[in-house]
Structure formats: structure tokens, C-alpha cells
Length: 291
Image (tube, rainbow, N blue to C red; front, side):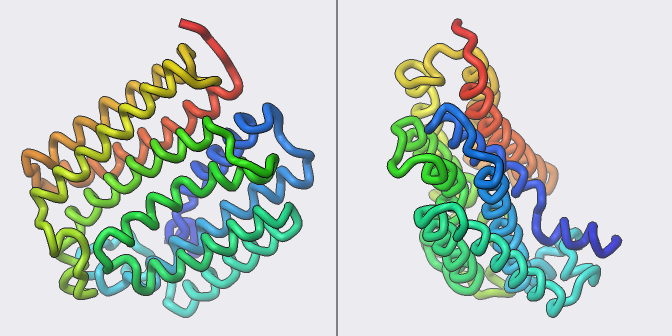
């Protein structure tokens, strides 16, 4: 694995791309247009680099758990990067991301600074705490929508609030499923006393299913009552695919499917359809096709 490929793997560049789409969608939904070129470029730099720094520092602290879980796809586990190199990447990404936000407005700067600080705290401590770690990750999925909103306005748009609720609920559910997949390694390497330690896999799976179901209900509510989603074919088709996939994954965890193949599928499919939902928000902001 080349160094550049290893860096992109460490920083999960694909997640940054999803965040950029979310920011653009929020800007269009809130203001119905994109900001000027300079602000637009800066608004892309901040979420991309803060996200990259967040994933890099998570791998830095998680190297023991990743080794226990035999995650040879991780650059720090397979030796593609050293811990020292990873830390340089972390510092560089956070500095670039937060500094870029400083030139947008005070709201953007505060959001970027809080997000970076929480990312460090999560990797260091919050990840192993019941519920709080899951809430942070879900919150980090919501942040780009709030950030994009405040880049172009100074208050929350109701559609952004509904999107945030949907993403937050689905994000917490996805994180609970992630804990179930990685529990053995997290417990062995980090001594995690997270949600699973307290309630067990069965109850955790039930909670995740409830959260996914609530996210689905909110996404359907948006289709009936709020622009630009109301009766918009461009919105409902990808959202329906997302909802059905997440409910299927929930069912799999409820019936205790434990195969490596299912765990791999659930990780990749949930990420793919949540990315699809972000694209649906963007598409709805750009195009209205009434049913």
C-alpha cells in the first residue's frame, strides 16, 4: 500500500466526500443558493479536513482494538503508516480545517472547533462510555448539515432540523450495530464498558431497530409535509431504498445473524444507503419532480 493510499485509508476520505455533499445540500436548502466562491471553497475545506483528522486520531487510539479484531485493512495495523506519522496527519488536518472556518463566520468557527475537540475526546475517552460515544458519532453525522446551514444563514431551517433528527437517529443505530460487530476486540484491547457491556447484544439490537424505525418515520413525514421533499419523486425513491435497507439490516441483528459476511454487508450497506440519503437531500434541493 503506497503512502498516499495509506493516508486516504487512515482518514477515510470517502466519508469526507459524503460530508461535502451534506454541506452543499444544507446550503441549498437553507438559502436556495450556494455562497460566493471564496466562502464555498472554505466551507468545503473545513468539514473535509476535520473529518479526516477525526478518523485518523480514532485509528491512532484504536490500534490495539484493531489488531485484536484483525483489521489488517487499517494502515497502522498493517504497518503502512507509523503512529508518529498518523499523529502528524491528525494535527495537520485539524489545524487546516479549523483555520479555514475562521474566515467564514463565527458560527462556522465555533462549530468546527467544537467538532474537532469532541473528535479528540471521543477517541480518547467517550468511545468506551455507555451511550455517549454513540451519540457523539451520530452528532458528527448531523454536524455538516448544521454547519452548512450556518455558513449561509444565522438560524436553523426547519428542513435542516428534520434532516438532522433523521440522520441522528440512524447514526446512533448504526453505531450500536458497529459496537456489536467489534465488541470482542474493543473489550479485549480497550476494556470497553460501553452499551453492550451493560445491556447485552439482544437489547442493543432492539434499541437499534427502534431508532432505525423512528428515522424511517421522520423521513416519510418529511415527504408529506416539508419542502423541498414534499411529494418529490427525486427524494422519495432513494429514501425508500435507504429505509428498506436499514430495516432489513435491523432485522438481521434482531435475529442474531453473526456471520462475518453479514457483519461486512451491514457495515458497507448501511454506509452506502446513508450516503444515498444525503444524495437524496441534495437532489431534492436541486430538482423537484412531483408525484
